[in-house]
Image (cartoon, rainbow, N blue to C red; front, side, top):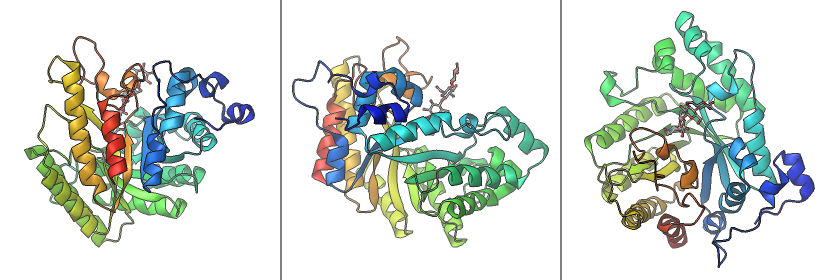
Length: 366
Ligand code: G3I
C-alpha cells in the first residue's frame, strides 16, 4: 500500500485518485508485494513505467506503487524524449516518474543515454553532418548532472553488440554513434557519465544473451569480446544489464548456458542486473492457461539461475501488466487476433498470473 499523504500526492504531480484507489476487487487475499519480498532478500524488484499511465490509470499506479521497489522509464529517459529539439532538454516525464518514485520510497534507474534507436531526427542529421563530441558527452553531462545522486544506475550504452556486422570485437557498426566516433564512443559515454554522477552505477545493457540458439551464442560471445576490450581500457562499467526478453516458444533455454555466461561476467568483476524481463508467449498453444504455465515455468528456471549468483542485483520487468506491454504491439510478438500477450506478472485486468507466483517463489528461494 502507498504510504503517501494527500500533500505528497499533490507534490508528486500525480492525480490523487491514482494514489488512493481502492484495492482491486479481484483480490480476496492481499497480493504479496514483490518489492517487499525482494528487499527482504537484499534484491531489487522493479518495473518499467510511464508518467502518462501513472497519472491516468489509478489501478495501475497502485499496482506499481505496491509492487515495484525500483522504476525505470520505458521511454521518457531516452534521447528522443529528453531532447526532442536540439538544446531544449525536456525533463517533464522523467521528473514525474522520479517524483512518484520518491513519494513511494522507490529507487529509479535511467534508460538509456546512448542507443542507436529512440533518437530525435535532428540528432541523426547533426551527427551525419558533423560528429561533434558535445552531441554525445555534452548531453550525458547535462542529463547525468540533472539526476545526480538520484538514480541507482544508468544504462549508459544500450545494445552496442552485434557479432555479425564485421567488427573484429563484435561491436554493432550500424549505430549512428559508431559511425560518428568509432569504437571510442562507448569509452567517451561511460567516462562522461562517471564524471557527472559518480554515485550512479554504470551499465552496459544488451539483449538476447539468454537464448540457447545461434543468435544467443553470438550475443554471449560478442558481449564478452566487447567487454574485454572496454575493461582492458579501464572503461568504468559496473554492471552488465541482461535484458532478458525471453521467448518461450521461439527459443530454447539452457540453465547451464545462462549460468556459464553469468559466471563469465562475474569473473570480469561485473555485477549483473536483469533489466527488462518478460516472456513472449507468441506461437504458443491457443490455451492461455497452458501458456501461463509455460511462461511461469521458464520464469522460475531463469530467476533461480540468476538468483543463485550473489553478483545478480535483482530484476526489473519491462512493464508490470499485460495491458501495457510492448509485446502486444510489436509485429514479431503480438497476437494477430488482438489478444494481449501474456508475458508479464499481472494480466490485463491486473490479476496476478502464474508468472507472478513464480517470481515470488524465486525471490523467496534466494
Ligand atoms: O509516443 C508516440 C505517439 O505519440 C505516436 O502516436 C505513436 C505512433 O507510433 O508512437 C509513440 O511512440 C512510440 C513509443 O514507443 C511510445 O509508445 C514509438 O513509436 C515506439 O517506437 C516506442 O517503442 C519503444 C521502443 O523501445 C523504442 O523506443 C517501446 O515502447 C519500448 O518498450 C522499447 O523498449 C526497448 C528498450 O528500450 C531496449 N530493449 C528492448 C526494448 C523492447 O523493444
